[in-house]
Image (tube, rainbow, N blue to C red; front, top):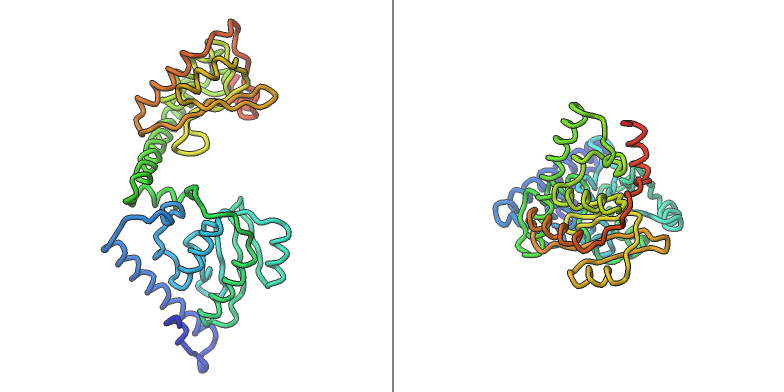
Length: 327
């Protein structure tokens, strides 16, 4: 039985009982975190993906967090008792729920709150016995649909900062961290460049008008490739780090002949196209080396034939808004 279950307060008010319990939980969590950092401050695969050491959660939630991870749910460390005054229990994170699941949860007395995609499942813990609370969460887990074990790292800002700070012993995760670090540095640098450009010269040239962005907004490893494609007559919409820190892509409203697609495939480039002719060029770099990634993009563009025409204007919402604002 959990050590907190022995806190009996038949002679105390519920509020005093709760404060005593919460204080004990916070104290033990703090001790567990300090011990973990002293003994092994490196991440397991699950911790890397979730973006937190298991000890960062309230102690009685450890098993709950692991089970949810196996079912495809990444839980924020703010989960647990969500108030210092009232005994509400919550599970917080970025996950989706269908209508049927929401109905089932509500029948079990679980409320759902959604703020900009950050979802909380919560209930009032009438009985402050942590074993009972854990059993309640286990019942809730049974209701949640199984989405399969999590494999993609959480993009929660706190999770991203956690992965930058701590180390994984897994070579693959170490490489992933290097890519995330590189992407972060690029984004910080771009923010400064774009801010300076808007201050000194907020008037786009014709190429920028077609692209729907200032040149300074293009990531450095893909900037020259995008400009060369534009000169060759290819209309592009997105480029660089788009979906995650590992993959590189350029996409836009253009078609490629089969022989060009075959050449790109031989170079390790994945080409995706939809029936309307919208195309994506995608590859995964072997190492987080900006110069080598830029070189790869230039090799890719060299395989693309000139279309002998002026590139069309990007028609994404972002590009249209850019032209309305700056032209």
